[in-house]
Image 1 (cartoon, rainbow, N blue to C red):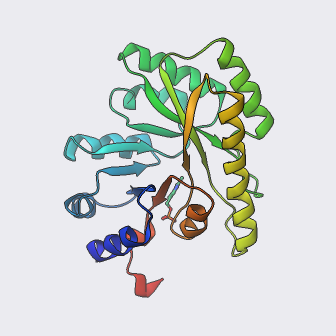
Image 2: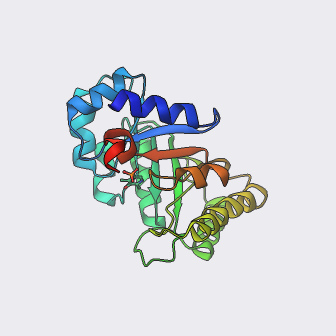
Length: 221
Ligand SMILES: *Cc1c(COP(=O)(O)O)cnc(C)c1O
């Protein structure tokens, strides 16, 4: 079933959009099945589960952190994490920078932006983001490679609203490209989950994070 789901998804996705399989809560057997289907990009939202799986899965897996990250846990993933999508505060960015330097890395990171109408504790708003970038353009963080932005749309059936939210992230990314080329190339936009990735791709997503649509029986959805 996982294999069928994956081949259907791969057929639909344009080539420039990277598929990241969200493996949180899934068993090692399920992860291995995804791996055997050729997927190498896996995402988790909790450090403990991520490190537990990283220890046993093949070493060529590229691990993505997509959930809220506490500063005191950065040290556990700094040596190997492929990309952190969920940098949501200046304090966290500072700690990632510190830990990256310790292990002699420049960790690829995305800034998480709060685009949904729903209340959420996590993610920068536009002004907070612009203020932060002004700061790091003056005092750069050498342990971080800024790659782009990540966002989550509201949980709603209103496709127009979802589209507006994704487009707002896209527009913000385009602004950063011209305002802060010194901070990064801003090429990545991580947006789109199982329920809304079609809209996200239309709006310019470069990375979709898919969980349930990969692992669950589509006839039950
Ligand atoms: C769980 C999760 C996903 C995947 O959600 P699905 O609806 O299962 O595809 C994507 N992004 C984040 C940040 C998540 O926590």
